[in-house]
Amino acid sequence: MATREVISTGNELSALAARDAGCRFFGGYPITPSSEVMHEMSDLMPEVGGTCIQMEDEIAGVAAAIGAGMAGVRTMTATSGPGISLKAENLGLAQMAEVPLVVVNVMRGGPSTGLPTRVSQGDVAQAKNPSHGDYKSITLCAGSLAECYTETVRAFNLADRFMQPVFVLLDETIGHMHGKAMLPTEEEVANGIVPRKSFDGAPEDYRPYACEHDQPAVLNPMFKGYRYHFTGLHHDAKGFPTEEIETCRKLIQRLEDKVELHKDEIELNEEFFVDDAEILIIAYGSVSLAAKEAIRHLRAEGIKAGLFRPITLWPSPQDRMRELGAKIPKVLVVELNIGQYRDEVQRSTGRLDIDGLFKVNGRPISPYEIVNKVKEL
Image (cartoon, rainbow, N blue to C red; front, side, top):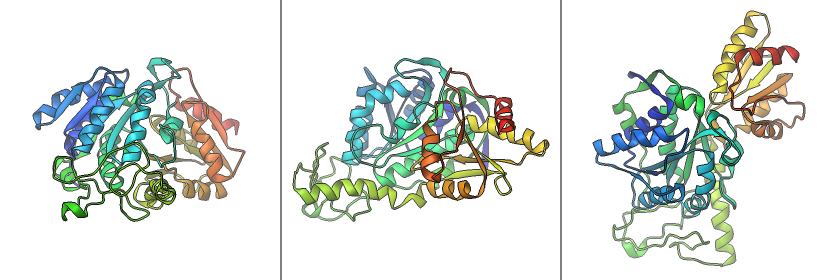
């Protein structure tokens, strides 16, 4: 595979990925520690005929991005946890109307204003249910500088495949980390773009939401001669509001099934020294870098530790976690929150003896803290 070497930050690589993946609209509002994503997009979009617009607030930023998605353009917004809170209502609209959108969330301390310039992974639970109602969220989490790029590219393809918002979680550490990354070439990324489906029949036959029980809507871009309706209300095959019982039931079940029944297309994980592990560390994002270093130290001392790193957080890789939890005696979840993903690990494995190493003071977890915790076990 051809590669290119880039020296950059995680935030800037996410923006570069968006451009290379065909994104041509960015709507957002600056917020620490994600602002560099928008700054970079303001340079990159005009170079390729796209548009980057800073709106008056986070709500307007995501509304503009959703509008671009309705018009058929690959579109993105970027923010941090407080911004997701503000965007929640419109994110629910995008889930219900099935508008593809990529949302980059560079996590910081919370709740509320929290620790704006410090690292956290406190938005993991929020990413599972960023808005009210029933639907299935898709959330990816970058664990290296290279993945800030590759996971953003993947997010655009998944957004168009499943016709809904796709979240890419970075955190302050990995977003602001500056270093070398080996990336696929622009040509390789362009060749891998998966365009959204479209309907090319007679306008009178167009039914965008009349699709199979496990498939997304087929939304032709606006202004192309096809008449249909966008709404946050329960809707019929042409998108117009309805309260018909069976239509409503099928709609909401389909929003679940289009993701749940195709998890094999979404799930992506990394396993590091897992085959003979007697202690399994589960970590993601920047924490996984510290976990790998800790495992090297532990292995040198004869302690058989391994890492399972979910790259797709939601839907969670529950089947694989259940398999590993059934054969590895001790499991330790390490994360920069108070156990948001440990709850999912407990549910997936059916074990209540899952240990945790958590930190919520805005400072990263060091490899030596992980080593010491494993030795306690």
